[in-house]
Image (cartoon, rainbow, N blue to C red; front, top):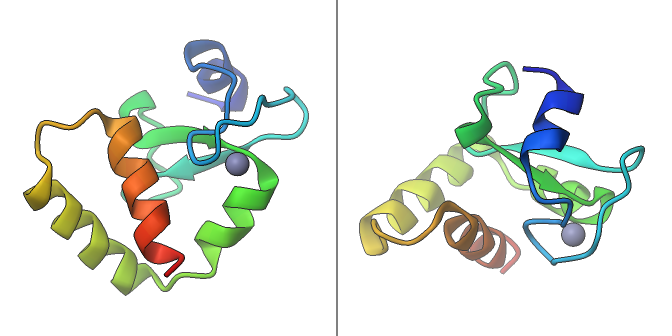
Length: 91
Ligand SMILES: [Zn+2]
């Protein structure tokens, strides 16, 4: 799965802030932190601004936060979890 295939599959909005995305200016955010894992379930489209924000967090903390969210809201849609993750990691 390459960038373009992911782009075709997903809605063209930033998962974090809801901004509309341009095909030449989006980033891929990998939910599990593994940039090699391009399974569509693992990838979100985000805008460059939000992507920069995400990258400031340490990977170890990232996993803790993801586990926490998974336990608190197991039935929430993935987009919701990503949003929650971004909110917590920017605190
Ligand atoms: Zn954004």
